[in-house]
Length: 194
Image (cartoon, rainbow, N blue to C red; front, side):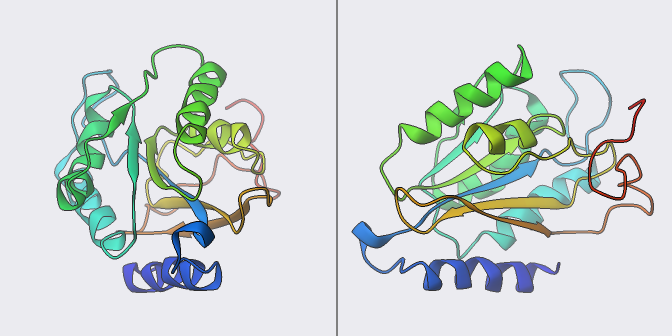
């Protein structure tokens, strides 16, 4: 999905959900995996392609209201969040991602739940944490992203405080390489052996 189409999609979500008045604002969570990294270590930085993707994320979300940004402590997630955080003058909240995935997902969900009703949040996570975070928030259960999937953007939108989440899957920035999603079976689940 092009940045323009994604911006229009996010804008449409806000209009449809009545985001004009504070009490009627829809809560939404935008989730993105960190951008392309320079290596397999915990201290890996973004590659030049990854830095461009982080800039693309900021461009896509430029006209979207954000009240909070959540990241893990890793360099690659903080660098992915940095352009949009600077653009919106938001200091990201760091939720430690060094332990068990399900515990991390629950911590992120608690952090989001502690925000005011109707808050808009960006979560920058990892290929194996985005699905569990969405599930911990009450959204659908999703498979992990594949190793080369970086362009995926996931959006949960809640039209009213007690309403169920609505889920949208989109793409932003440069396309992933051909076959980047080959770790998924045709039904979207993970293939055995991954």
